[in-house]
Length: 268
Image 1 (cartoon, rainbow, N blue to C red):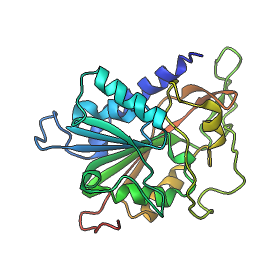
Image 2: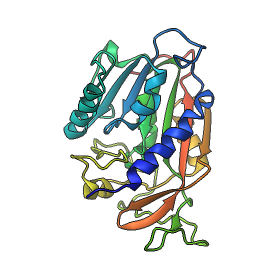
Image 3: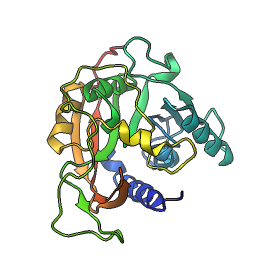
Image 4: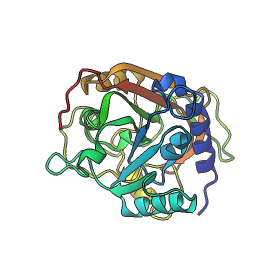
């Protein structure tokens, strides 16, 4: 079933982030400030929203997702757009598995920018997740995520119109533990991309939610605990309409940025 709101959410995120390139804080390519190669790691890439957002401003993109269907769709899109595998390619992998993180090797280190879009609410241990992504950055590289703001929901009526005065946190929480209190496990997150694509299992995605939203201070805290510096969290000016776990909501999206210290050593 087609859900037109997916495209609207993706476009809103794209527009907002492209207006915040200076805030992200790296010398993006094709903007007059950098001529060197610039590498993007798109983690939990889904079909590639972050890769499309930043594609015009980087020279190489590598995606990772646990879902083979998502990876296949990601690569098919790239090839259909005439982009070579040397420019953009995704693989099946899980960087958070403490026993066997994958993929490994020099190609998967030293990124200028790492992103995770609508993914951190699926991760069992957000500090571990942020630390793993930080360690894939070059010193001075940036991790940027987007997710949902706690208390930023607004209920919608049957026609999808916002109901004033219903602000709160209305997304369903399927797990019985408090954010940040459970030890890391090898929990396999489901595809978190805000897309309506083959291989995107709506029921499984909803069931895999660990925490449906984050506070600004909470994100700053787990970024800092992961060893990131120059941390900042901002929110989109306007809510976006979504149908989430059977509910019609207007949700608030946050963006968080943190930098790997320039003098940091890899913990891999």
